[in-house]
Length: 388
Image (cartoon, rainbow, N blue to C red; front, side, top):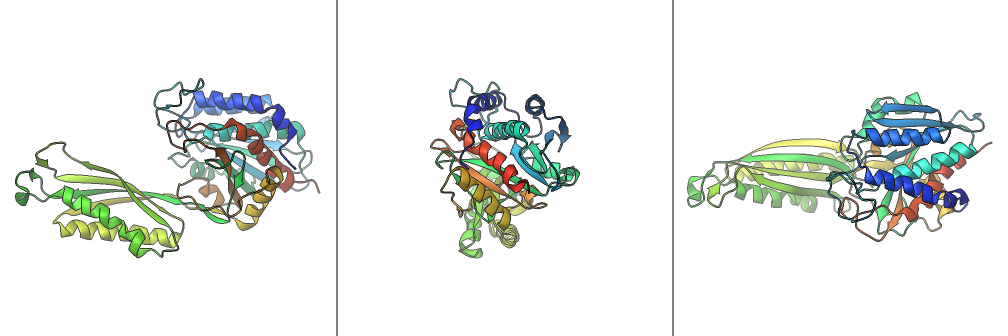
C-alpha cells in the first residue's frame, strides 16, 4: 500500500503544526507548552483517553480500534524536546526563543505522529489499541527511561513499540533500518588531571598538567586502535580541554577533559570504560600527575528486535519501495533504547533529503517527508493489528 491519500490531503495542515512547534522549542523535561499543544490536538481528533505527566511531562493517548478481540496494543513513540542551539536558518518560522532550536527534527516526529493519530482516530480500521507516546527529554535527561519507570508498558499493556527518526542526506521519505544494534550506547566522562602549577618560564619547577592532558588525549585513541577488535566499533572523543587559568605565563594546577564514549556492544562498552580508566591513570602518572575520573553510563545501545524489524521494513516497503534493510549502525545515542529493552519493537530512519545534519544551527526538518512518515506510523497499527 503506497502513501495514504489522506496524508496528501492533510499534508499542509500537519506541516503547519510542525512549523508551530518549530517556532516554540522547549528543552528536556520542560516541554509543558508542547505537551499542551499535543493534548489539544489529540482532543480535537476525538481522542479522550489521554494521560499527561508520564515521565514527568510525557503524554500518552489511546485510540481504540473498531474491535478489540486481539487484546493487543501497539505503541508508537515520538520525541518532543529541542536543543540548546541558537538557530541560524533565517526561516519565517524560525525559533522565537533565542538559544533554543528544534535542530534534530523532533518537531517533525511529533507532527507526523499527530497526523497518524488524526487518521487512526477517524478510521479505527484495526483490532486492538494504538498507544500514542509523546516523550520528553530525549536530548539528555533520558525521558524514555522515565516513562518506562512510570509504568508505560504495563499500564497501557503495550505488546510492541515502534519509533522513527529523520536522517539528513537520505532521499526524502526513503526508509532505512537494520536488525540488532542501530544506534550506540552513549557514555560520558570527565577527567581532572592535577599537577603543580607554576611559572611558564620555569616549567622544571612545576608539574605541567597541560603536557599530561595532551598525552592522555592522544593515548585514549589507542582504545579504538589497539584494544578493541577491529571489526567492532568504538568512538572515544575528548570534546573539551579546560584549565583552571587563562594566561600567557601560568602553568595550570588542574586541567579538565570532557568527552564521550560510543559503543555498539556491551562487552566493548565494559572494555572501553576499563581501558579509559587505566590509560588515563597511568599516562597521567608518567608525567607526575594524578587523574580523577568520573565516568557515567548513558543511554544503552538501541537494539532492534529481529522479527519486529522485518515487520517495520515490510510496512516501509509498501509505502516507499527500496527500503535499506541493512543500513550501517550510527554512533549517535537514542533513549528509545530503554523502550526496546523492555518490549519487542524497532526503530526506523526516514530520509530528510540534502541539507545540514542534525544538531546544526541551520538544520530544518523537511516537510516533504511527512506523508511517508505518517503513513508508516498508521500502517504499523493497521497491519500489526489487522482484523482477523
